[in-house]
Length: 214
Image (cartoon, rainbow, N blue to C red; front, side):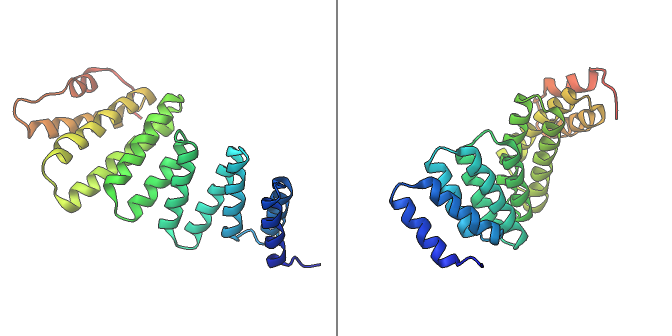
């Protein structure tokens, strides 16, 4: 027998009002099994998981919604859902990366570098050095795209960009990627050469420290 979605949703809402959340969750799951792309019902199930303290289940479902919106060509809606994931789990590094990728696609370079930088910091704290390096590379790439497109003056090219290069040098050293560390150090030297009287211990360390090139 085919599922009557409207009737099933009505019953699920009734069960929620009666405090029978387990029954409501079971109904929502049946609806989603019949229609895996029903983002509205997935969202309702995720919100119900949050209310009942099943945070990881909520995050898993929100991730499915975010992917679904991307598949349907709605990156802004996907970004909104990823932000909901980060509200539940601010230390979710992969969600920061996915959000950064959307920001890059939408030309929002400043937000992109913030997302990638957050991801890089979280990956580093977890000891995931390879992913930390990739996140920091993405942060610097977002900076360079923004600077190339908008030619900003002031703190962005003189502070934010060098700041991210610092992180990239550190991440590359930690991951044993000598080439990336030296390339980033060279970019730092170029930044500081345009600022008379300013130097950085990072550039000196990166250039002097022996490290294997990949």
